[in-house]
Length: 199
Picture 1: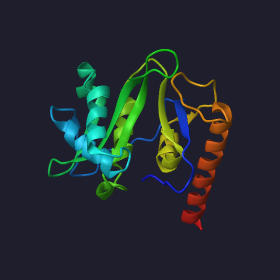
Picture 2: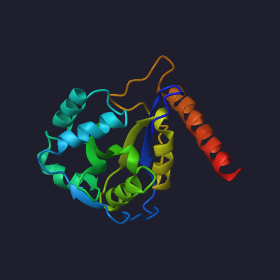
Picture 3: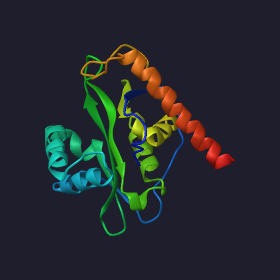
Picture 4: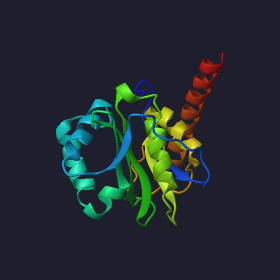
């Protein structure tokens, strides 16, 4: 769930470890690769979890980003279906070009609110991370998603503090300063959450 009470700053994480916790889907759920027509359910899910503002914008995004690479869809755009066959969660490993070459990134992870807390996103990340890729794996996100960033950290992703990536929009403070501010904010939120659950 997004926390829009804090400033929105974009961040990047890169995969630093090959070992990570293993998670299986709970009973009643199953994995499914993209099948024709799933873009509508994907669009509804993204709007429902407030990652995209409108259905039309979500449909257009899927068409432009995913349908443009049909050879990757079935394997690298994954869904979790519930007992009724409805889409409960989704995630993909998809090409991105933030580092001067085409690299793979974890992309558009989302879980329907009624299924959050069941480990679906963890199982998706487990499946995607277990795929054998011989290159850097990264993801882009933002401070509003600090809970998801904590999950990514458990899978071996670490904050990126390097040179400003290509095609990255930074504010007046510049990429390095904004990144530092963002991760200070995120880590403080992680500490607050840890204290609230242990205290």
